[in-house]
Length: 280
Image 1 (tube, rainbow, N blue to C red):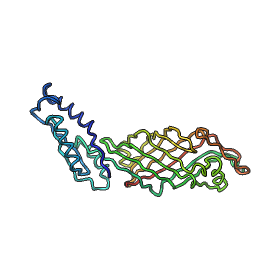
Image 2 (tube, rainbow, N blue to C red):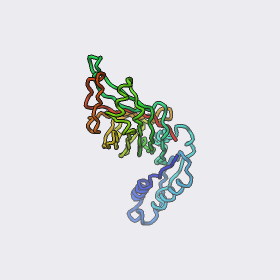
Image 3 (tube, helix red, strand yellow):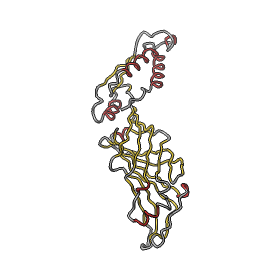
Image 4 (cartoon, rainbow, N blue to C red):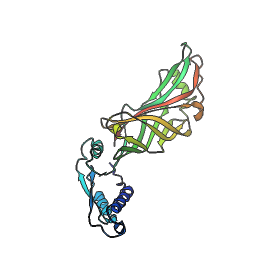
């Protein structure tokens, strides 16, 4: 667990504003100390000691005593302390909370990624989906807890395309040198470029829709994309599922030619993933 900064800039700006509202013009920050102090309650699930003490002192100094911080701590060792902190804030137990961050980088066994594309097989009268999957998915995300839920501030996913398999060896073998050309481009990556707000409902276990904005590198081509996704916290793990449909030409992909087996392949395909992050 790495504890992030206490959102000091925002909190101290708020301290200055409240101090000004509580006192006369001459007692605003930078003026004389006001006669009365307002006490704000802050939750500290991490029992952070020196960091919180320094924050309290700085608030008191900048507000000239108009604001004081009372800390409630000691409940951070429970397995669901992130969710517990948010629940307590929503119940009005505190005015502030220590904003921690945590890297999640151990992928669960259920993590998988791959492709889906429409095709027409020689032995079928109608089109069907070709689906390839791999469990060789790695990466990390960083989540910062907030009063309203959490925020995904950073993240990356790496997919080993050489281990993607489908229900047909002929298709898989051809993708090594055609289509995805996995021998030449063995890795696909996604790097988050914009933070994502995660509502409290997702932390409480409800699947919640969102959009992942970032750079997708596939077949040696990098594009900025927006991936529709769902996220939820289940059994102490963050599950993120997403799917992006795109024209194959956007990533310089030419549909493979599998003569005598596949008659036609659609001009667009989909990247699909379900990743399960565990806490490091």
